[in-house]
Length: 242
Image (cartoon, rainbow, N blue to C red; front, side):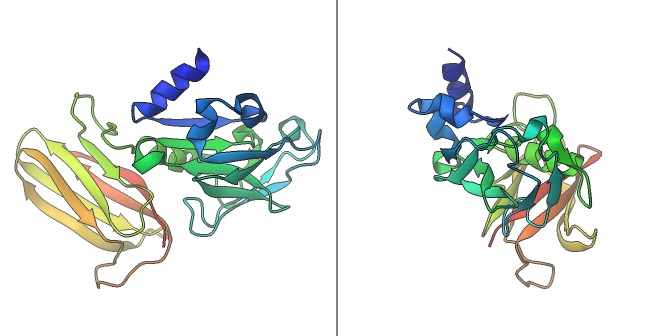
């Protein structure tokens, strides 16, 4: 019953994060197994699996590095995962896949399958808070999924995210008001001002092709959209994959 519930949740266009060992082993042969774009390859050793993980080039977590609680409880039987329709996010120090991201058939939902335990990661240059923020932005940006506000209609979302050529900022206004959307790199430098002006009531779409304000194509990596909407300013992480 639990498998059917989780599968229905994903099929409704939602996002789901699952972590821990044995997910693949316990769900092989079920519809849920195929919904994470992942192949379970190996159950790992009793201890001595993961001492560190590195974000993969061009992925949502490109450039991120975390040490891990090696030979401690989170390091027991850490599964080795390979992409099967999904994209590899993290590899451990031995080049074994540990975290897979998947957007479902035709970007119909969002899923992350991690064989490492999130609490076992150790903060360094990047923090677990940053990583979870990226995960949540990705998982909550499914098509039609509300990201901001409480009304039945979505007030703001970004789709697709991650993207390679174009992404869209979709927002709904109840009344005419100013809207400001700008994109920054991880150094805090503004790379493009997408809109800054008055918009009428209704639903609007603003597209971005991954270029800076001079028309130059930006490289793969993580960017931050700073949005002022409904008199409130907030930020969302965007992943550009080339």
